[in-house]
Image: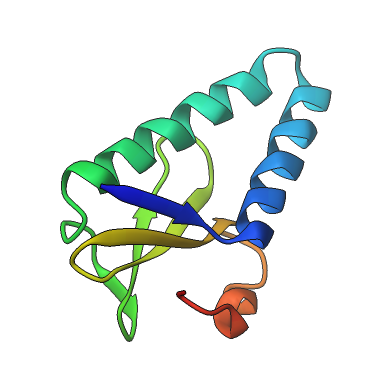
Length: 98
């Protein structure tokens, strides 16, 4: 299944990895592994996670306070945000799911 990631979501991800790596060497890599595992879970069962708003679903990431917000159109997955769960919960709302 095709997975596309919004450029701003990719930037968020990279910044989060950098932040965690600065806090403790190796922690950034653990975040990468957790996000990748969450995305694989989405690919395996894209309708499993709850709808957050409209047709946007959220998959929480294990161990880290992050969620992956995505749209599934039946053929592909579009990740709108890789967001910290405790910051600005609706900032991603203007991003298009295309």
